[in-house]
Length: 493
Image: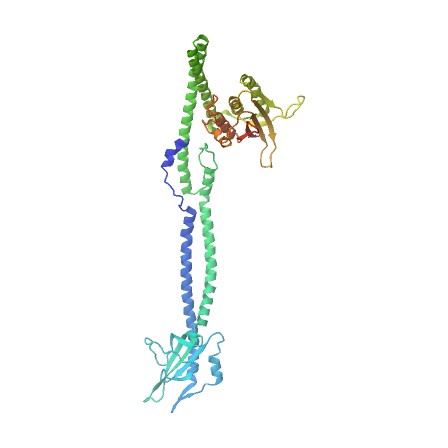
């Protein structure tokens, strides 16, 4: 089947191991823009918060500068400063921030204040009786402090000798930054929760949208290698239905090729049986009529080849019948596995004795006076019979003269309620056995553990095919001190 699928698989595009999954790709394209928008919103929010904090801070500085200007009154000889302690305490009342103030006349010449404030920048134009705001630095014991300054230029004196006075009030940026930070936190926190909620909805939406692909994967991965039935996804979106339809078309083509191949093998095997049987018969007749030793040796080789070829054809026919399509047409029934094994063992005893092998059935300690309990299974009795015949036949072929073969049947109770009872068939021999590394290889088609014997390498492969079609398992294990055990486990009814 792999040989049939290989040309079709070669046409599919190659996906590198590092390719991203569709889920991660969608989440990246949906969540990354949200992250970018969140960062942009945070930046805009911070700028807005700073602007509003500046506006509130500037308004407070303006009121303080007006209050300070009212305490300085022009008189004939100059300026009268009426700046009581209470007024000073009001201006410096902010407990969380430091306030600086200064009165100068002419502007820049210190008259009153608690600190010398920087003058406005050259680019700043002062207009009389209009507040001007700018940023600057003030030297303090802790170093240079960034401040926001409000300056008012006032005219006083005679119109002929008009002079100017500048009132400056400054405040550090601590309160402004604290206010901006509080606004940013109060705005960004709900925005972050909203983004998280949107991300959760996006993730849930992507997961729900890709659920049909997961169901399609489970429908395909849960199949056996020979299950080529069409995929059913009626409730899936249109895109997934198109994918399922394309896969079904491929499965139908592969199924047709496989059926044609199986039909060819079956027909060829049927056609080969008659001439091989005739060749074997003719070689046996020639052996009876020939006395020449050299010619008899050649005829023996011809008969041996014909026997092996006939055995191979029979095995191929059995393998074809074990395929799913053939198994469905053969039908299933309930039967006693213990009785089947007893009959088979009795039939094969003469052949085993002819090869010098002691073949027997272990009655599992039951008395001859009491009937043994039936071990009932459901399946195709013809194929189950063929599987057990192959196991015993392999033991007879390879155990060697003087060996013992013991066959036993037992029913094994289930470990838990979810598992069925198991019907177990064990075939033990005291032959040379097999190396441990070959215990799984012996189930491969045309694999032979030894060059001795007349096998074709299909016996245990047929056993495995038949047992797995009946939802069972088969395994090989070594026995001590020597020998081999083949164990077949089938669900009991």
